[in-house]
Image (cartoon, rainbow, N blue to C red; front, side, top):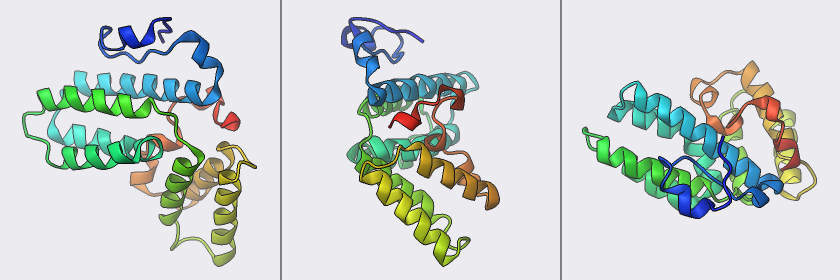
Length: 189
């Protein structure tokens, strides 16, 4: 992890490694955004080193879809369209893609953005939960949106439900755990 004081100037010079001004990392949302980008970049490098293909790029994008949706709805739509039309020779496209993804993830997600994603994820459970469980989850998400709960609480409830009712696509989502759980930052968001 690299923390530099002249973050903007170095952002494009250091192999697109995410950087952030040291003083900004005191803000939990900025720190969450930074750590999300650091771990996203690390996963990207793994995919790149394993031999990037159109399929692996689309799978990678699918993994980060909900993080992107929470942070930047417009970039979520634009990158989704671009990845769907990705050329078979992904080299130049991939460089532009990761730059745009990391730039979009630089914007900390708002409660509104997180709420949208939480509701999308809850939709995958609609056939599995009873009426009371659906209502409880919905109320939990709305209580989070109102600022009365940290993000960690609805996410933990979703994780619990998805462990009972597994869904392969959701299991692969970076949104539910964008960086190691030991960091325990989402209880501040």
